[in-house]
Each structure stands twice: as structure tokens, then as C-alpha cells.
Image 1 (cartoon, rainbow, N blue to C red):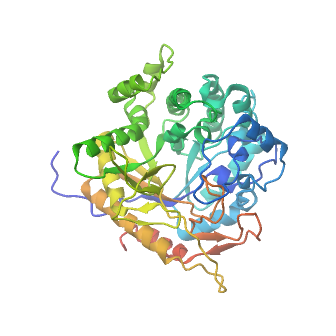
Image 2 (image 1 turned 180 degrees about the horizontal axis):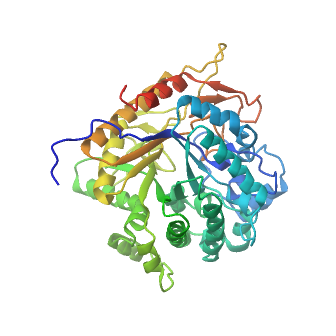
Image 3 (image 1 turned 90 degrees about the vertical axis):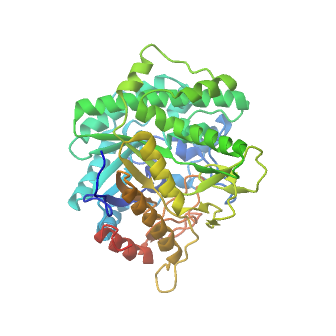
Length: 486
């Protein structure tokens, strides 16, 4: 319907906040009955440009299990949110957070993943966290699986490569949805589900010693099992509490053709489809036609059980969340210089600046992404990760002067506001790594995103004392003004 008025900015009740993941902040990896997770056997990268995503072998897992220290596995220690959550949430409240996107460690609830009864100590920890958030009227946005699963499921059934993992996962989700039915409204099923394309970090399936063809088969089969699990969780949630909102989450890989050459435009379109395939299934409830050709040409055969298509159709999500950090360039010939990025390498865009980690900074690309996703799906959108990793330095004055972070976030929020004025239904923004944490891709501490500096180095040395950066007060003012001061 044609309208003469249009939104001037962010809606009332916009969910401003920040985001973290359990395996990057909690620590307490072996306390109160928690089991070991897949995140805790991925070694710290030796250099900044080396991302450890899928290169895990059973031998490496055995070595990690024999090592009871955190020296090579920083995600085991995180930033000790497990013992400091009250202080951290108080700081979030001081900034005025309306929401806090966090994840739950599946192995805190079901240490091996396949027990019949949950670990009460794990449930009690999240009760305390949710109660603390409620004290400050901060809405939790909870990711059910964020790059970690009980390691025992990898060892016994190769993670999501097995359909049996669906049963283990939905037993876990049934418990937490019921336990926290009155404390959590917003849920996400899988973090950046498309990262399953890279293997172990998302799928929990050991496939690094397989051929590329075999990897493609096992990864897309694992994705199918996650699709079914996600759809079943949506149905669980509707029955447990009709007020639940369950969304999906995508690592958005915005890409541009390198030239107007139709071959480059088509190559970029194909890359775009491979990224949006995941949300096509979770939002629309069916496999898109273009994937039939992709599977055929790559000899991928998805094993489906009778009723799977009906499950996907019934279990579509109510909103779409995504991460956005940078954009990429694609050409048919792939002849350009490469640039690092969020899980991928793409061609370098000569019009963009880059971060300390080589990620291309593209605020306008966020507006492009928001409009494209709104046009494609017509469901509310939620930016649940956006930020810049930088080599922050704590000064002698006990402060971090991070003007570069303020500039990055301000430019992206401006483009969010433009997208809202374009007509996009945007429900919230949780900046990634609102407190410094362990990097997902490299397991280093030096890559800092937060408004809050944590005194800890890459080797785990430091007091863990929290310090407010300049961006802390800046973001507080943004939230107070509902973004109208930008």
C-alpha cells in the first residue's frame, strides 16, 4: 500500500545492545559439571592471518583432551564472565543496553550432549545471568548453538554429520525453552549457520583429511540436519510459549562484481546465492531451485527422510538476524588481489579501507544488505553482530582512546538509519564483542572489539580488570538518543 509518511529513524523499543558468545567469554570450562566442547579443542592460531576453522583432526582432538591447560586453548578461559557476569552486566546497563545477545553452552546443560537428564548447575548459572539482566530491564537474545557443541557428540557420531544429533539437540532445547520460558523471549537457533560450509567449527564433524568433494558432501548433509533441528525448535517454542520469537542467523557475505562484465556479475550472483541459500531455507521453508543445479554439478546428494520437507515448511523463523563486518568483490576469473574477511578470502575492493586484520570496511554495504534482505524475505531484520577488531592500547591514564571504533560504528549506524528510512523493518542492533573477548577465528585476545577493555593478553596474563573505553560513553549517548544524535 502506498504511504505518504515514512519513518524518520529507529522505532520505539529498538533493541540496542551488544553481543558475545559463551565459548569466547565464559571461561569456567571444567567447572560445575560442564563437559568439554568443540570450541575448546581448537588451538590458538600462530599468526593473525591464520584462521583455524575446519582444520581439526581426531589426533588433534586427542592431544587437546590430554592437555588440561588453557595455554593453547584460550577459549577455555575466555574473560571469566562465569565469575564476573554481575560486574559486566552492570557495565552493560550503564551504557543503557536494551538487549544483550549471548549464547548458552550446550555442554553446561548436557555435558556429553546425549544424557537423559540435564546438569542442574548449568541451568542454575543461566538462571542467575537472566535474573541479573532482568534487574536492569535488559532483554536477553539467546543463541542456542554458537560454534560449540559437546565434544562427545563429535567423538561418538561426528557431530552434525549424524542425524542422531538432531535428537540430542532438541532434547537440550526442550529443556532450556521450558526452563527459561518466562525469562527469555528472543531466541536464535544456530549462529552463522552458513559457516557449516567451512566445516568443524559449526558442524562439529571432523572432515579435514577428506577430499574436497567428500567435504562438500558431509558439510551440506550436516547443514540439512541443522535445518531440520532449527525447524523443530521453532515448533517446540510455539508450543511452550506462543510469545517466543525464534530467528535464524547468517554471516552475511555481501559481494560485488569486480566489473560490469556480465560474467563477473553472474559470478557475484552465484556467490550471493550460496550465502543466502541458508536463510532461503530457514525463512521460506524450502530448498531454493538454484541449489538443485549446484548439488547436481558438485555431486552432492542430500539424504532426506519422509516428512523433512514438511518440517522445513512448518518451522520457518519469525525474524532474520545476521552479522555484517565487511564486503567482498567477486570476478569470474578470480584474478584480483585477495583480502581477508569474516571466514572468507575475497578480492580486494580498491575503494575501501581495511581494518588492522585486513577486513574491508564498507558501511554503505550494510544499507545495501539490509535493503536486499528486506526485499527478498519481508520479515523483521536484526543486526546481531557488527564491529571492528583493533589493536587497542590501554594508556597510562587507564583509558583507551578508540576514535577509530567510534568512526566505524557511527558510519554503520548512519547507513542503518538510511535503510530504515528506505522502509526496512529493523528490530535491533547488538554490536559484536561489546566487551573484549577471545577471537572466534584465531583465539587471540589482541583482536579487541569492545566498549570495555579487559586486562588480559594473548597468553592469558593480566588482572582481568575492566576499563571503559572512549566508545563506552559514546554508545551510551547513542542509545539515550535512540540513534537520533548521529
